[in-house]
Length: 262
Length: 251
Ligand SMILES: Nc1ncnc2c1ncn2[C@@H]1O[C@H](COP(=O)(O)OP(=O)(O)OP(=O)(O)O)[C@@H](O)[C@H]1O
Ligand SMILES: [Mg+2]
Image 1 (tube, each protein chain N blue to C red):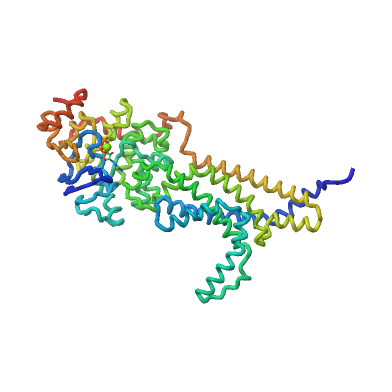
Image 2 (tube, chains in turn brown, cyan):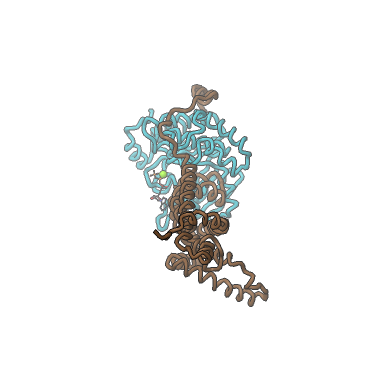
């Protein structure tokens, strides 16, 4: 029987490919963080219907959702240098376009993509937050920013997390397209290896295993986070049965006093 | 002292009230009664600036706001003069009981967390919930939730307590514990001014120093609990009270 598949190669490819894992994760984490901040901004603008920005973001979100990621990467790859040239022209600066790291094109494309997809999800989650809690925070005298940070976002996160998690996993897989903008991450390295060994199937199988493992690990992490942020939903059987405490219940004693206020 | 002058509020085209005038002395306990939709909550919410009045002035001790032009800073400061207990409790559901009480201390008063926790535990103790300090709202009964909310209000040190139907979302058997807690709060803090909107006429009669009958965006009748609840003068008050005839208003 001919040796159609080199099983050993599938395994030995993996360490070589994993050398580029930091690049993949770098793209993922940076785009995710920046994308989430942008998404929150877009969601807030759209919720508060801030004129002009609201319209711009509505179109942007529709555009990003309506075009393939691959095309967006090319747009970033060719568009960012053009934008820089305009910038140089109007501001009389002299950025060298050739010195722009390829990473930047990819990062811009992914961050905007993440922002667009997550903004809708975040907007819905923010809308779901109980007004009563926000009002309670307002009466305490908390500032808008404090309320957002301490009440609204944690509440919205509970609702948004499952969808954010799926989006995060899409992003991990989406980074395999980064090569089109000249970034060498895992998939690009896989192509280089394959070009050298002509063992395409093995390399792509190695890649598939790595991405799969990444996704599974991410899913586990997301589940842990979900568990943590849902800790307020504790077992109902605890209702009405406080843990034994050393503290005397002073309030109850005071209640016994029958003083009447004049 | 609290002075409300020419206070007006409308939602879209719906004028809730157009000229409320009221003076409340420090330490008074004002009971507001009146039919549903008459604007009682709106009035309370205006005092706390959860709603921005369209016109009028509100003065709480040395602080005055002139509606509707209120700056952000004014608003934040003015809000701290009063504290509100809501019908639906409005606890922070992701925070446990002591964290609920400590939240304002930590974020608004910038008190270190340890100190804020100690104070929160003290306030929870006052409402008889010290053993429940680590319970999340979802683990508490309605009555316990409202008592946590009361503790949260007390922790703000605001001297004006706004209570908007604090027991009307509760199962009947839980009303008593909350009323008991409120009565204790009133006894413990004779310098607090309290404005209580309630359909618990018996309770209003018991604790209030003055009762206002609110209808149609107007204070139709005001006086001692005895005057308003037992010997009402106005036809509307009589009609309203007749509907509550089943409730005990002690003669
Ligand atoms: N945010 C709002 N937008 C529009 N209308 C409102 C708003 N809040 C209250 N209203 C209306 O204002 C009127 C007065 O409401 P309010 O809640 O102050 O009455 P209430 O006296 O507290 O009644 P209840 O006894 O039912 O609590 C009602 O007709 C209500 O529908
Ligand atoms: Mg009301």
